[in-house]
Length: 334
Image 1 (cartoon, rainbow, N blue to C red):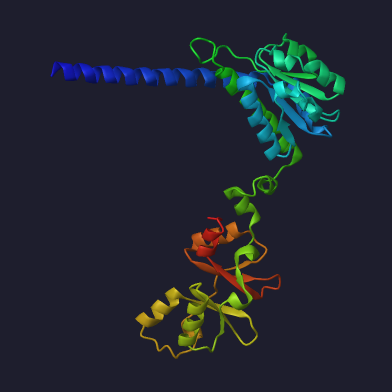
Image 2: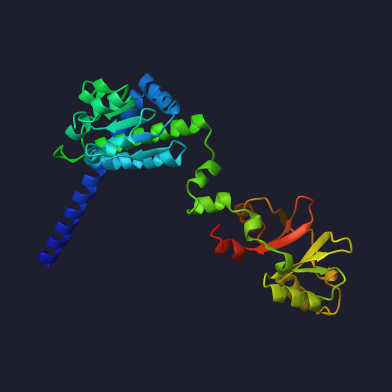
């Protein structure tokens, strides 16, 4: 029994050790990021201005872990309105330097500011005439001295207890890159719709780009009956089109109601004759949406009013189609 207790205690001690280690890492890195806000100054503004005035692309360079962070920064810039891509310093020394042109701006990342593969490129970047923004942890580094603008990314300590693995430094660099990207986004007036155009395959792109007209059922797929149509015939139209609803129009082809599966159940519960006109069983003042609106707005309308379908109107408020929640699910809007 004592052996089992000792084993359990040992397991708890190991778990406590893992938790303590994780908490220490998070606290160190959180402190590093918090301190980063205190060093944002006119150099950051100059870096933003340099990028805004750039007629070409932003090229991000970095080795090792800095390179991995650099790829993320380039991707974030590109998706938020600043054309950017990553160039590996090692490959740049063997031909890829040709990707950098006079009208470009280079963001060079090195915590020490003296990474050999990167510093080797700096004179050539200067000779090309491209703008150079350096990111390092030391204001007296070679990278800082050669940069047109230097962004200081200082750290008190790495979260690694050996002080070797890039941890706090890479986190702080990534945050600095995010700060650049978002500051530029706000200055450019970059919108959610602009963002969606960079993400057409994602759920956000579908929510912001897909319009009602893209997913609605129109023409011969649009279930519609006249107000004098018997309920039984309206049921057949609704069944044939498979939307669980049909629009109801008057003699002037104006929308006056909608007949749904729910209306049919209520009519049956009331023991209404199916030969009565559909106008006696329909729902009046149905929810509608214009064809030019976003499909995500149609989803919100249905969810808000707990309905499964809506009638679609054109610019003259004439009914031209319908859609239901299944259409939006298939389109990936919800």
